[in-house]
Amino acid sequence: MRILAVSDLVNEMLHSPALVERARGVELILSCGDLPADYLEYIVSLLNVPLFYVMGNHGGDGGEKIFPDGGENLDGRVIESQGLLIAGLEGSPRYNNRPRFQYTENEMRAKIAGLTPALMVNRARYGRYLDILITHAPPFGIHDGEDLPHRGFKSFVWFMDNYKPRYVIHGHKHVYDLREATITPRGATTIVNAYGFKILDIEKVKRKT
Ligand SMILES: [Zn+2]
Image (tube, rainbow, N blue to C red; front, top):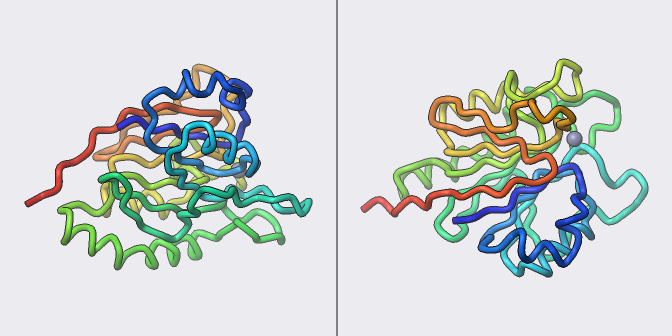
């Protein structure tokens, strides 16, 4: 199954009719935040496939529209779409006193606790907790930065160890050096920085009988 993941940076090619050719075969769009609502709406309107998103740490300060129409906000939710089990956790570490879309490590741990019952249901029903976790911030120590706003969440590392999603797809960490790693395997999980965009081919898991 082909997935278009986007984050943080408007790509002019995707923001044009060339999108249709570039994203041929895409069945699902995942946004990891810090993108204008109209950009996401444009992509959805051309590709006409489901969009799931989380918010980044930016947006809304100027009163602009931040939640795209035609998409589903996955923050704090677990869903099934086209055979894939997907959950979302928005925002970044808290770094100032405007805490919208910013969380302390404890607050993020509490958000993860909120997902747990649905993950347990998945485990019972499908034989696995989750296929994809979409976040804005990266996990601690993977694709993250040294400064507080760009430091990853330790609770995401805990999440990977416990729930073994096949993918964690995040944004937030801008990539200016092409040598910088953006796809990193760790245990059962592949961590993907979607900065700009990534097209991923993900194998569907057959339902466990
Ligand atoms: Zn960000």
